[in-house]
Image 1 (tube, helix red, strand yellow):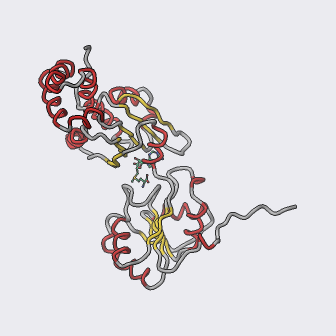
Image 2 (tube, rainbow, N blue to C red; image 1 turned 180 degrees about the vertical axis):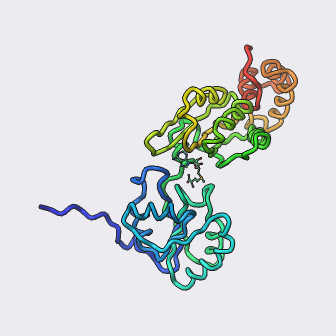
Image 3 (cartoon, rainbow, N blue to C red; image 1 turned 60 degrees about the vertical axis):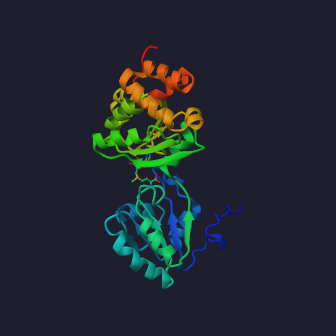
Length: 298
Ligand code: SAM
């Protein structure tokens, strides 16, 4: 019988080079998402810098690998970076991983990568899972331009202020949120960006994966309808501010609209803004919802 074809784990393209730092994406749930090349590099480096060594030990264990693990997290990265660069400069090869997904994306690693680059050492990307990009890819919300926001502030007042600041942003917004704040965050999204389309993606690649698209105004009720919907890890993909209007007349129309809507409500505010700017009332009404206006019967 013919032997099965071996995966190309040790080809020249996959070989680990001395003095290189490999930034390796790891699964965000489904371990089948660890790329063969990532596996080869994790198996080939001298040591792995890991956000939480227990987590990474469990991942390596699943794939039958054992490697020296070095804890590298937000609290020690600054101090660790110089020593790690010294090891690279001496010819060791290192990998950098975080607990899940792509390192440096709402995760540690930036300081080490910068230090390695400053020292003229090669830094090699092993791309793979990233929750924000996975959510964007299934959202059906414009993906030509997006702004990775990551976690909004934990405090309600600061979170709402951050959302208000983002209200005029035409790019799609990518937000991360945890289970204990998702309901509050949804309430703030509904209050500030009620008219926007939102995709809520939870537990991506895991057993209870779910992604649903709705208006931000409907998000709190959707979450409240089933206790399970508040569990797990979340990405929120939020449609950007309407572009046609912002491109046509710049930010001033938003400023005018914001004031009018605050004083007069969405419908009256949009009507007056239409007279002032010459833009269509219907478009301005839609835009006012994106700027925090409450939907009204026109
Ligand atoms: N570096 C990671 C990446 O590339 O996506 C993100 C790390 S950040 C500390 C963790 C956050 O990512 C979670 O709180 C959640 O918002 C999001 N996240 C991670 N895994 C996820 C998943 N399977 N489904 C949905 N969101 C996820």
